Length: 404
Image (tube, rainbow, N blue to C red):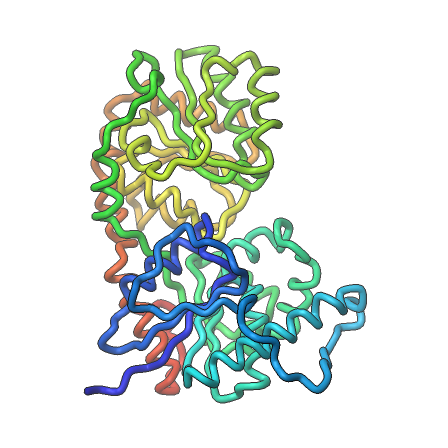
């Protein structure tokens, strides 16, 4: 039997989120003939996404405290106020190093910069491992939405260059890594997040039982966490403008801290009867396939998972041209797969929605092209590129910037 490369994927949790979905899909699709895969999560939380039965799962919060004679953490001068957090990071790094040592791990694939910093600290205690950091939304947001974001931003600026490789789903994020974090281009590989196209399209066939979808009015759908990043306040303001010209309703799927704020805004705009907040939905894809327009009003993204899922469901899409991801997902060469509008602009978003609502031929064109575009992100080919990147790293080859 050929020797398999032992790989650990580490993520804070497998709760709802784009990065977590990526980890779950990779766990299911990475090549078992070449890789021996294990999962590490930091926090002891019930996973939302499934973990394959053949993948061992370690939870750092549940592992025994390491035998550390003393904890010494290198603290940047401007981070002295975070000394307790850094001490916790060092303890977790020892725990990760223990798992890596026992399992004889060769490569750690760390998802987000928080896990990246943890893995690089662990590398001090297990120096033979290779660490690949998958960087995404925290770079796109300049750590605005991250817990202890300023601390991890400082750590990333001083330690991220120690990673053996970096993967990002966006060419624009790759540029930020080079310009703001001094990462050499040869260390960075562009690999988009994977989507299981067949699974999404099968789920999209399920029926929808909601009055908005059985009426005559057009339905604008948005999916995502109810948080400032996703720009649903902009969508509601745009809907008020749309309804001044055409009848339309809006369905928003997702949970989050802004739900009360958004409901209040809908009331203030006089559109509350025409907006449905459906909360968390196990299967958002059935709504995607049946909406008139899919709206993506984000202020920033690390990729834009919902856009790719909407493409797989054949949605006509209007999206804000925010950093980073939408422009790369909705355009390939000269082919456009949706409308891109100015970000932070309810008038521009409303204009894009109205353009699609008034032009059934354009909607049909985007709906026809969308599933073909989604195949560029299909799990088998994306996970194959992850496997190639891991094996190239162990062979001593530099990244070719985009694995083929």
